[in-house]
Amino acid sequence: MGPVLPDTLLRPPPASSRLRALVVTPAWVGDTVMAQVLFMRLHDHIPNLQLDALSPRWVAPVLERMPEIHAVIDSPFVHGELALAARRQLASRLKQAGYRRAYILPNSLKSSLVPYLAGIPERIGFTGEARYGLINRRHRLNEAELPQMVERFAQLAEAPGAPLPRPLPQPHLRSSEAQQAATLNALGIERPEKVAVFCPGAEYGPAKRWPARHFATLADELIRRDYAVWLLGSPKDKAVGDDIVRLAGPTGALINHCGNTTLTQAIDLIAASSFVVCNDSGLMHVAAALGRPLVAVYGSSSPGFTPPLSAHAKIVSLQLECSPCFKRECPLGHLDCLNKLDPQRVLEACRAGPSS
View (cartoon, rainbow, N blue to C red):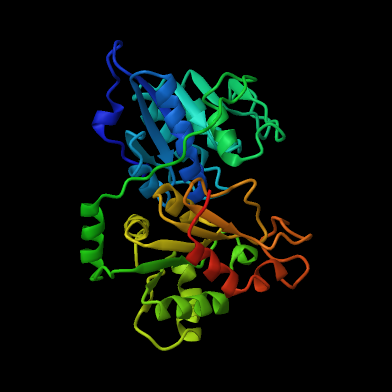
């Protein structure tokens, strides 16, 4: 059974009503947070825009915290799956909504099929995978002019070939005091006076993950300074969270919440924190968009490509000759870029406070 769309979404708007557009979002949480800059620009450029998002369900919670997004439509397709019949079924439903434009952020051919099959007249994106015909307002990527991912997303709000106006706005996710209180109550957590959130996972691979023993040492230092420490992440991060708890000193102030929260709840727990320490990950971008003081640890990836978009973020990196390599695992087998990044250096960044 295909996704069920609300009748209010499928009802075509009156001719004089707002322009209805669809954005096909990335499948990564961090990329989707950075895409909010495009959504902001589109609302600046287009009066009375209604912007809906076609998105995998695991990134939908961040879109639900963006005021620029009117509705989120579930994209049920797994990575690499063509599922042409299911895409046709979804496209048939979307056709009734009267979309006039589609902004297609992933560069894959499959991501552009639904807007094409839905008959959306204007389909905007980078050429990618030779998508001629599927994309009919094509941008060509100049990596030198658009070195950051957020710039590439924002470029889609402009005419092809036009310069990108700068500076760009920064993402901003909503998390109210009431939402935070509801999340804490639902999880049975009392709000400490001072709490540090650690995000020890990184979906991309181990070459982006600061070692568990370093997180444990940092946790001990912060607990000695009267901080509670919460570990946040997906179920895949539970094992590394357990390792951090095992390696740290015996105390009830360090709690592994990895895998025990929804992404929506993780957003609210991060918003309730004093500061955040994390790898280059989706939750790093969430913390940046929530305006929390943030220390971001970089190993195999580059803050030049996907930096935390916040004036409250501080980046810590050894900047070795072999990094960034952008590999999932260290090709040299030593992971010096993270193993040699000692906890004292990160602690000093926490104590110094964030900087732009």
